[in-house]
Image 1 (cartoon, rainbow, N blue to C red):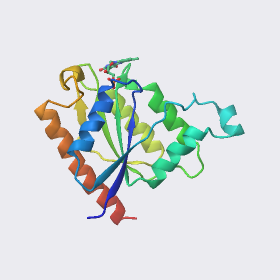
Image 2: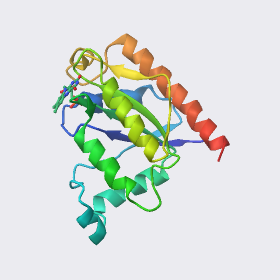
Image 3: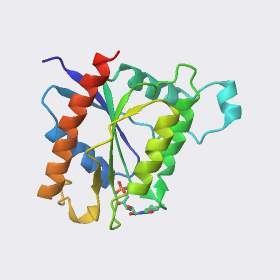
Image 4: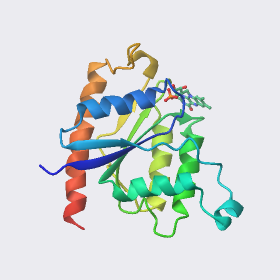
Length: 186
Ligand SMILES: Cc1cc2nc3c(=O)[nH]c(=O)nc-3n(C[C@H](O)[C@H](O)[C@H](O)COP(=O)(O)O)c2cc1C
């Protein structure tokens, strides 16, 4: 089977991020023909149109290249104050200004892990809205919200909640089919 190149983006930049742990779990649970590349972007500055008009930061160009060469993108992000985490929104704003629109027609799957009772749905729905503006092709269902995330991983960062493992696995296989459907229509 043809390998699929899957890029991953984490909305949290901290080392012990539960969202980063969720992405590690996704790597473990994914269909075997998926190959993963982590997109690092902690060096991307805060968006400023003056900077953009001078030149796009190198870090933004590198993220754009990773998006252009991937077959699909998985974003895992926390919810910050009922909405998108700032680092992720900042990155999407930067990339959206590139003339060839690197998010355009990229299949995307969304995961959120948050310590609240809901698991970040408000952030995920706001992220869908922003991705729609950029013509990304977001998988609608299954949705994965990892609520009370501090109870779902062990000390080593392994996802240990069986129900979440099931939800995430289902989403990854649905994402595989979604990527195939998108490719058929190209
Ligand atoms: C600025 C900020 C805002 C937050 N707002 C929310 C929120 O609206 N809903 C929620 O469930 N958790 C909220 N949290 C808690 C996060 O869900 C929790 O810190 C989570 O572990 C962050 O994800 P991470 O582990 O990947 O860094 C917030 C945390 C921060 C730092």
